Length: 198
Ligand SMILES: NC(=O)c1ccc[n+]([C@@H]2O[C@H](COP(=O)([O-])OP(=O)(O)OC[C@H]3O[C@@H](n4cnc5c(N)ncnc54)[C@H](O)[C@@H]3O)[C@@H](O)[C@H]2O)c1
Image 1 (cartoon, helix red, strand yellow):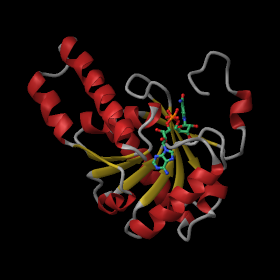
Image 2 (cartoon, rainbow, N blue to C red):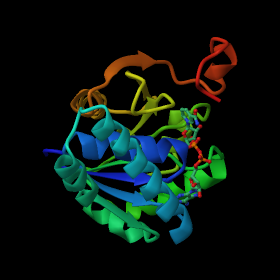
Image 3 (cartoon, rainbow, N blue to C red):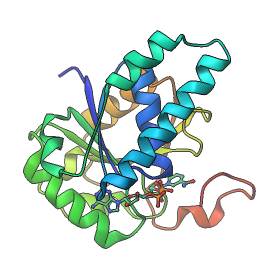
Image 4 (cartoon, rainbow, N blue to C red):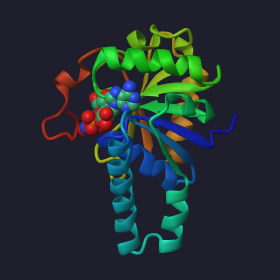
């Protein structure tokens, strides 16, 4: 299935960046957070990010306007039913992610891949909270997402090869370079000093 619409759950630092990069690359985005004020803030930050591209001559005002039309914001998780691929970028707490993945699995089509941007929680553990662990994967963007090229793809024990292939492919369509990283909690304990990761 061709991915045209990306669901992004969590409109904080990372969700904003992922949504911006997605609309820049022609995807429709459904961006979900808990409150309208957070979504308004996110929309303003994304628009500011695109303004920088206009100022540097990389895109026109018209292109920016078209990109902003591709962004839908919502407080309703059920809107994720229209997503072809979901990236969860919510608060880094297992209980929060567990609740989100359990909701997503009920709402999203059975073949929709559910990716998480987690920095430290096991993908296998998140996948095990669902009945589709083969469709659950880590897609670890770096901060700031619009500027940093690397995306780590992290397979859980049950992640299917097709899920990983589709995730690499999507990251490339977002203009990113991918590497595979191992799934073990706290892998950031050895993260190099000065990295943008928490
Ligand atoms: N900030 C970084 O440098 C960085 C880098 C790579 C990965 N990450 C990972 O990305 C994820 C997000 O990090 P962040 O820095 O953007 O966090 P953040 O605190 O800026 O944003 C998290 C957002 O998630 C929202 N949220 C919480 N529960 C939600 C729910 N049920 N549905 C929708 N939204 C919900 C919060 O309201 C908040 O707006 C984390 O897993 C983090 O580990 C962060």
